[in-house]
Amino acid sequence: VSGRSMRFSRVLCLGGCVVDRLGQTVEAPARLHTSNIGRMSTGFGGAGRNVAENLARLGVPVMLATRIGTDDDGARALAHLRAVGVDTSLIEAVEGARTASYTALFDATGGLVIGLADMAVHAPLPPDVARAAMRMAGPEALVFVDANLEPETLAAIVDGKPALLAAGPVSQQKAVRLVPLLSAIDWLFLNRFEAAVLTGLPADDLDPLVEGLIRAGARAGVLTADRDGMILFCGGSIERLPAPQAAIVNVNGAGDAAAAGVLSGLFAGLDATGATGRGLAAAALTVESSHTVRPDLSPALLDERLRRLRP
Image (cartoon, rainbow, N blue to C red; front, side, top):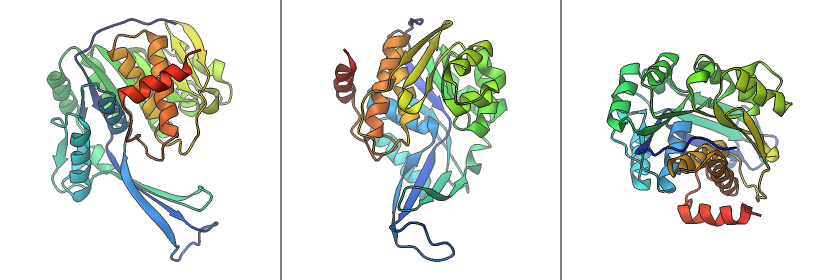
């Protein structure tokens, strides 16, 4: 499969920035309505933010447009992004707002006991903010959006006609926001369950899902299928790419890493197949880490994994 090769000035990511708080009990099952002995960890999430950090670690010039609160969580998230090299000039701190957060508690087996998402800070991101971000990024920017954005804001981004528009649904619930925009999205990154929402087809049969996406107007993209690897579709052609061997520690963040890997390839001028190979390598590296974004991810580490993937 080949795709158009373009040159871009930078990548602009628009979407979510979230503080993650993850806890796990030492016993299973968890004891409800009382205190449990366990451990907590904190980190950062949000698809737009994750893709931006992965790209920065891969040496790609990237800007992030999002909203955070004027709280300690927002200050920590902003400092972390700056430290890894993301351009944060488009991030707005909303006075009096809480930075979006996701708190999840797991039992000792890794099963989710309860999750709580506080995402209200993202809702006010208006279309004019997105338009201003695109003007600042410039006409040669590759733009990635996630479906945390409201439909009106997503439509404004499409109307801005970026050099290349890539998108990720984030979740099954928010995937519906991309349905009316499918034909305007150049690259789509999604899993089988999100594809099922976009097509109305069962999630367990991959080939009809991809064909349904193409019929619905999707131009190109990558459908991640866990241990089945990825399916690349571009220009009406379909290519299956098997999952590389990986010592899985945590699959959280793998989809965002795959998207960033592909985007880094497109930024470098690779064709669709070459870029998707970078996505596979980035995802494999990420599932071998306990972090949502692998902290030692680098161009050298990605190149080394790519060499292992080649026959």
